[in-house]
Length: 590
Ligand code: SF4
Image (tube, rainbow, N blue to C red; front, side, top):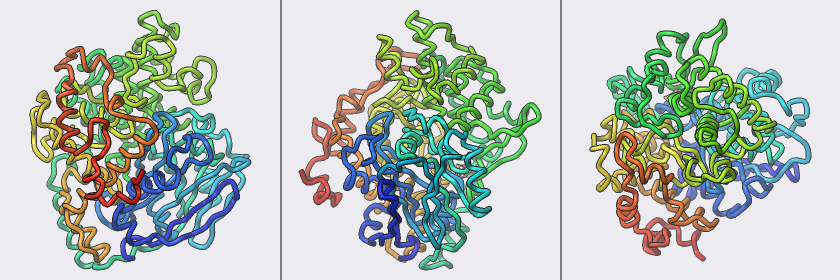
């Protein structure tokens, strides 16, 4: 197999065993890699396994472009069943872990079971070892990563959890080398439930391509397009993802104080421009990426890994906090302790609104930065009032008698866009198979940036087709595995040509759409089988009833269109003809 390595590694923590096995060409052709393969294994081998039980899987999977010089191809996808939502869940992270895993000779790692004591897994091209991690248990992410890398060497990359994962906070993340994060959905808690502190991979190598000359020619063309695109050539390198603060705020879609408003009067203080002027030290990038959207900042005589747009919002505007220094500190705390910044901020925002209505927790007010900095470690360690906040906004708000104040879908806290100013994004949140998420299909492209074309952001009807196209596109990108920012400048045709040259197989753009649709429907089938249904394709009542700075989301009209375009029945399940068309009949047989 060219592009792929043709081998996966299975680790059983109950038995302490590791076993390589071949990756079938047929399976790779149907699901590509990353998210696609992970969802396939989760469905076929662990359907319905409780998220924090040993039967649940942790899949870390690369794709056929991982480790090549294709733009944005240094990433990796994790798949598991989420303890936050109970849905199928994938999460993508940058860094070099995927590249090193592939250099060890594996396309994917599948972990099941639960070790009797804390362990970490060490993978090299020569061997696979489980090492006791008693001395690492309790360490924050940077300390654990530093200790493991000192043992494994400079050519290693580490996925590790922090105290939040160990204590099974359902929105605990796992981090790559402490700098990039599998943020959403609680992968950290699933690793914690398995007593798996970390996985370290070390190796160096080269991915064999079917037609290297042609591959380099397409890559040359892609680099020129990336260099000519204002987002990938200027906005992201210069300001990082925080460049979006002004854009989204001007569209009155920057959620403020738990989505009570869509415009932050003091957004300037949190803008990418202000961060650059006050704190910028240098850019950082995932392996092999020329865009380099990461930030390293200087503040108070120290270097800080810069907050992304989403974290600036969740730990800033959504909490009514305008001080960028507080946001930088809060973001660093989440990263060190292993917490998803979006869910942490969303839960704190919910708690603040509950408190403002006299429903407790006591003394937590919007804008209280010092209190937020105190609470984050308590959440991660589930201490004092942190215990309740660690449960996430849905459980917190329900316990306090106001479930409508949790800004979440399927249990996952919403990201940094108020859909009352971006109607299509609202449909995207509601139909997202891992819960409230913009990365299943980011309508920011068409509704704000004009990519692939500008559409009226306040218009609802007519959005479903475009959203579905993006849902398939993003599922394919997560399976190749490549960065979605590179796709802002490149079309599916470019990725199909790269895939053709890498694998020697006849991939076309429409094939990527088909793979994406297959993955999407399989995820849907997983969710239906574990109890989700159309009633879960919804939004918090506030977004459906109050205008905010735009209009209430016209969800029911968009959903009707969406189900019809998808060829799903009124119960939300794919029609038999659709299942056959996608070649899923063997897998989805009742
Ligand atoms: S654009 Fe940013 S997130 Fe994407 S690969 Fe490059 S550095 Fe990583």
